Each structure stands twice: as structure tokens, then as C-alpha cells.
Amino acid sequence: MPKEIERKFLVAQPGILAGLEGERIVQGYVAKELYGMTTRVRIRANQAFITLKGPSVGFSRDEYEYPIPLADAEEILARYSRGRIVCKTRYLVEHDGMTYEIDVFSGRHAGLVVAELELSDENQPVNLPMWIGSEVTHDSRFGNFSLALLDSSLEAKWWIGEYGDQNDANPCCCRFSELFSCA
Image 1 (spheres, rainbow, N blue to C red):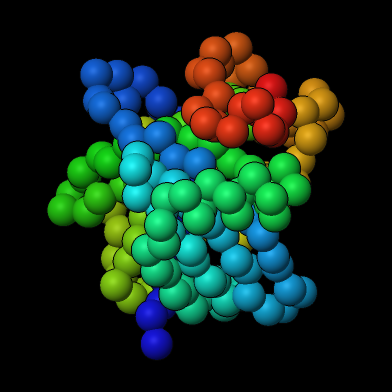
Image 2 (image 1 turned 90 degrees about the vertical axis):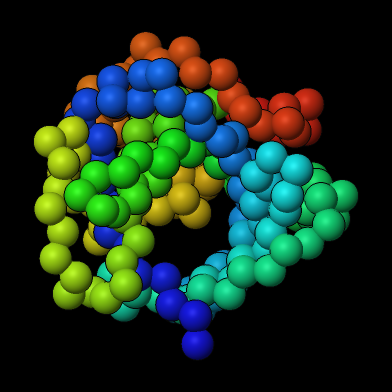
């Protein structure tokens, strides 16, 4: 059974991304069952995937991901995500033999920068880089599904000031901007 084992951190020094090239990602959520699976559709460049994720237990959860046609992903996002969309740019940063996936959120989530680290084992030792901030692995507010549920109001941007920079001008990467409000 495929497992995702990951830890999640805030990025205290997003300047480490200067000069790096990232990959834009649009992902939407079409279903979530309480204590059950979440169904996500993701578009990365010209590839699309459907992912089923089980509930987290510690740092782990079941994850099944399959490629799907890009046109199908676009239609599913447009017809069934009901605006539960997250747009971000992902950067890969190496440190101490490990790859950190750093997501710079845009649109209505602008200002939030989170690093994810996939592990082979929950007890795998990790030497954190200096640019890592607080660990938020067990804070459900930082889950992409939770973020996708937020509206665009300033009150919904609880990370501003404490966790991010409200002056981030990163534009929405959502190619569905005419269908969804990414502002």
C-alpha cells in the first residue's frame, strides 16, 4: 500500500528561492469524507493526476496517485471542485541529502510559504536547514484542503503577519481564473 510520510514547515527565509525556477501547480478538491479519503485533481505543467489520500496518522497516510488526461483534469476542476482550488509554485531545494518541496502560494493564499519534506520512515532523522521556521505538520490549517476552503477575506488570511507577508504580489497561477476567483 503506497504511503506518504511527510513533515511540513513554514519557511522563515523565502529569499533562499531567489534565482530558482519553480513549477506552477493548480489543484482542486472534489471530495472529502470525514475520517475517510480526500480526492484531489492536480495539474503540473501539461500533466494531470488524480490522487486519493487517506486520513493522517502521525506523519503518514495512504496515498494513491494516477495520471489522467489533461482535458479530464480541467473539466473535473471546472465542474466539480466548487472553487476549492489552491494555486502555488513549487521549488525543489536540496539540503543535507534531502529534497524540500517549497510551495509559494498565490492568489487568495498569497504570502504563505510552506516546505514539505517526504521521508522514508517516520523516525528518519532530519537535519533542518537554517531557513526553516516552525513545524506545522500537525496543524490542519496548513493542509491544502483546509486552505482550499478559505475565502478571499482578510480575516481568512490568518497567516499574514504571523506566518507570511501580505505584500506578496505573486500572481495567481490558476489557469481557471475566469472560472474561479483566485484574488
